[in-house]
Image (cartoon, rainbow, N blue to C red; front, side, top):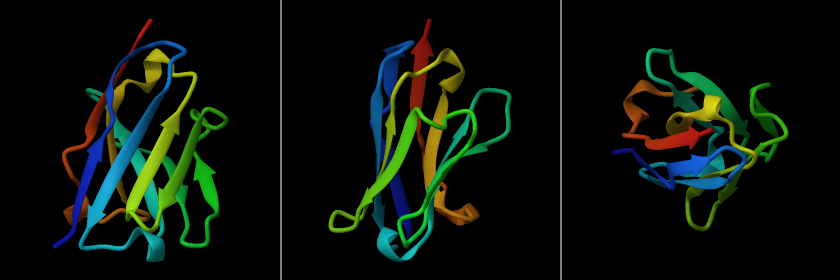
Length: 115
């Protein structure tokens, strides 16, 4: 069974930072392309960032230059460092493989950015 558990979300003022974590079990983040996704209320889930098993990264234009995706293979954990947060970053953030697998979606972690 694959389980992805996100954490690190919270309430932060615009311009602040948060670091999200995704602890994986039943899957190795070191041998999969992994990604972060988010879903705001009333909107579709969207791609945020991805990292390949080779370490290449890619970001949505809306977060480029502000967010950084990384992983710790020893801890089997994916991270998303979010800086210079904006109110439009408010959403539930999820991790998954890239491309995503429907059965892998977890509960996500809520990020709320106030102005």
